Image 1 (cartoon, one colour):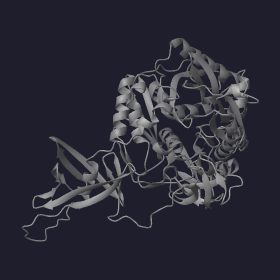
Image 2 (tube, one colour):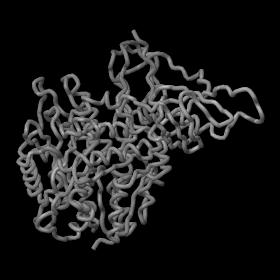
Image 3 (spheres, one colour):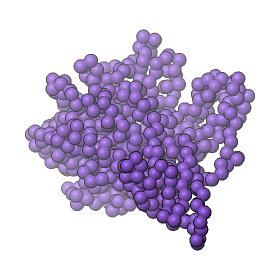
Image 4 (cartoon, one colour):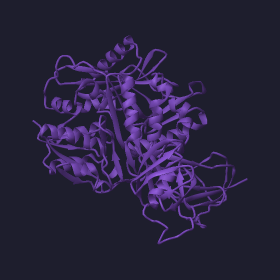
Length: 613
């Protein structure tokens, strides 16, 4: 029986595994980088061991250090979570060679399936060799790992070399393995997967289907179970293929077999030899704790002959600290407050007041709703997400709410091209026009202009805010009766709550402020100074860092005075395990270059200047 378990991971998945261990009476051990010294998973564990450094290559990708940590803390088992070393057969061998129990499949099974190239060959498929014009579009894909990292769509042959280089660099950074391959890219199919669970006694459970078609940068954003509108014939075929793949490698534990479904046919993508981020929707539908089942299987227990029957429908969204309207740029800062209404499941690796840094994935949390029908689950999740208290950096919350309510999604007709078609409409700002006024009135609470008896009316006061990237100004005034504004009746105004009545409709606004950040309900505002900073001017053609991160590459031979073309890639930044390309805004001359590889940058830092031709 396992007594003490180390999780070789961080954040949300580590906290989720610790929760099950607590239920089972298993002591827990965390590992943490210097950047995660005060992270939630570090605080939640019974014991924690430091991995010196901050970069994944120095910490969470160092299997030797993690095994030493397990032995030092007295652990007798290791759970890899997902990402990092979870699909690394050498790490699994290190754990087993140290006499520890490995919560996962055998190293041989991982080796056979963790490399997508070997997995395809096992299923009778081959990656593309030399790519020709007739093969386009193609997908460059990392052979190891997952989560959308190390993937590039190529639609022109002259883009292939850059895509290969970028994918290799990103895969090496995220997984410690820079191998990539090329396969045909199928446009606008549905991403369907099958959860499997297998024991050491020959039983394999296919636990239904999941639809994960809503993706950004090939990384899933919304997942649900079961896959809606899937013909039973096709669903059965997918379950059969998943079991076949598991038996082909004598699989043990939890795993996922992924397919792209197009034109009524299933195309094998890969097998993930680990727990998936989206496993909670399967847990909700089948009434299981998949982490508990993983542990029992690792202890040698046998599964029942047949899995439990499914019930209802479950949907999960991934809440990211990112700006979808700005090429999904990751955001950093402090997560001041995160709370969701009852009735939905919240899995997170952050607590109130925790910093969101640049070193790791920008996912803040997962929200999961389960209901008897899909329509009820969609409504419940959208409502909970919309009313959640979320005070911190910009997130994809509004995008998720709009996605869940989009007719294409509610009718179950979505595919992997959903955001390609609808992103602009889904990210069009729709700020609440009363939110800035509510913020200003809350700020003005108690600061009356009347120091004594006056017969003259108070002059209007003005406050400026940035809302959805745009500046706005609101005006209000102090009266003997309290605060007032034109066109609106101020029913109540204090520091935390403002009640306004407009056109006969009364609405209450919860207001919270952290420095210059103001939150009015679900609206995030930035309080601006009364007078603009006259020094905050940039020359035309200035390229600034859109996010915090590290300069990982500057275009070869790029120097001041060079001639550049419109759209030419100039600088590559890495933030939160993803690479972001900065290109020339127009054809012209590079008059300044301040970026160099290895440089740490903050948002707004001037990197280069291109003088238009």
